[in-house]
Image (cartoon, rainbow, N blue to C red):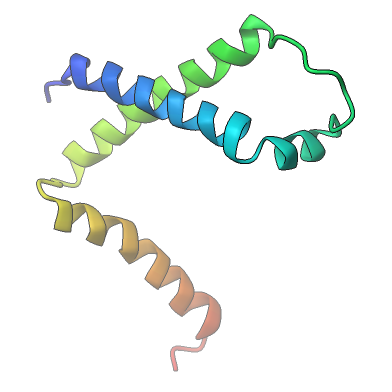
Length: 100
């Protein structure tokens, strides 16, 4: 298995930026409310709160790369099946536990 490190870095940065936009632009008020900081003054985030998600995103991207290799996912349709299959099985087991 060869890991394409350039793709991993690009995917990690894209994932990190998407998370940043998600939590600071799209859902900033809901996120602040969930943290109990809706009335707190805006402050510059600590380095840990920037590096933590970046490292987590990096690990996630590598894990996804390993899973894509392990499950022989070679096309978009393979990826869609890989994503949908567990949800359909979970739905079936949850709503039809007796095998109806």
